[in-house]
Length: 384
Image 1 (cartoon, rainbow, N blue to C red):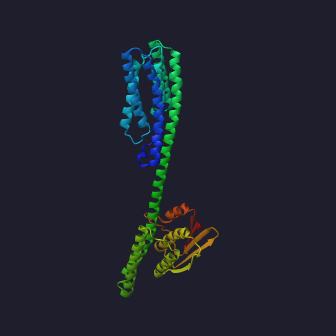
Image 2 (cartoon, helix red, strand yellow):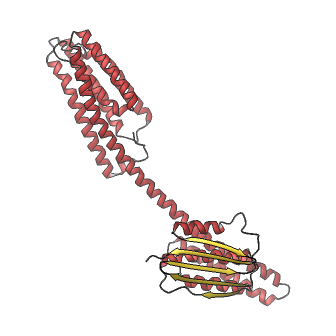
Image 3 (cartoon, helix red, strand yellow):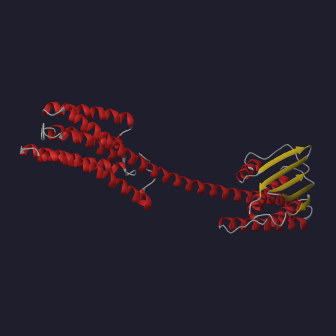
């Protein structure tokens, strides 16, 4: 049976499908219960009629319970086991209760046996269902021999009708399970989309804060060194630290509230300004005006990380940032000198995170180092 991860009670379409499946199964099984009742009309002994009616009604009741649990995936497993054990117990009791009814005239119990075989797709898998069917046929033959009926007739009714009912029920239960699994797939897809959005949000916050905090730390360190020898410049650096902290706080707030639209031109100006304020000569070739927002957002993330790396992992004197577009591809190239072999620290997502992000967008990140010159090249597809 399908997993209980989806509850049709909270899904109207699935709820209606469940009701339709339940009605269809019940109609077929209850119709098959009418045929054993024919034997009651042909039995002259009133006691046997009474006992047979009790056995048939009990069998139908336990059938209904098993039917209900088969299309109710949220039920507790203990309830399921009780329903199934009740059906097995009642099926055993029907042999002495229903078997003698209309003996030799009507195969009364054989119809119950057919209904029992028809229930097997709701209870067990195919190998066990075959074993149950074989056991039921043996009981049907034994009842016929005990009551003086025709063994072949009982076997035809129990086997032929039972297999037909089982095929119909199996198809309906399979279709129901398919519907539940489809709903589970939709729910999983929604959860995955939410997880991806949370990951994207976390990545954006990391990019913003990582760049801003790195610059703040460097500026604060510079202000501390300058304080004893140049208090006026140290004060200016401290004021810039305050401005950077306020700017980072505003960007995070805008990101949290979902109102932040990335302006690649503004990002270029900000990164270039920070690099220059730290003594790095920065040359910028501005992006083309027709660059779509999606591509600009990806390149802005690369730009923030690249600027951070220039400050943290090099002693750069110059840096060149170039953004252009060739057909359906936008490219950003960041080149700086003063690169060393220290690399990012163990807590930095760094270039690996950028590569994963660009790959998810259909782009690519390439880096290379020649002597002390480090080159970062990022490409992203351009889509309207």
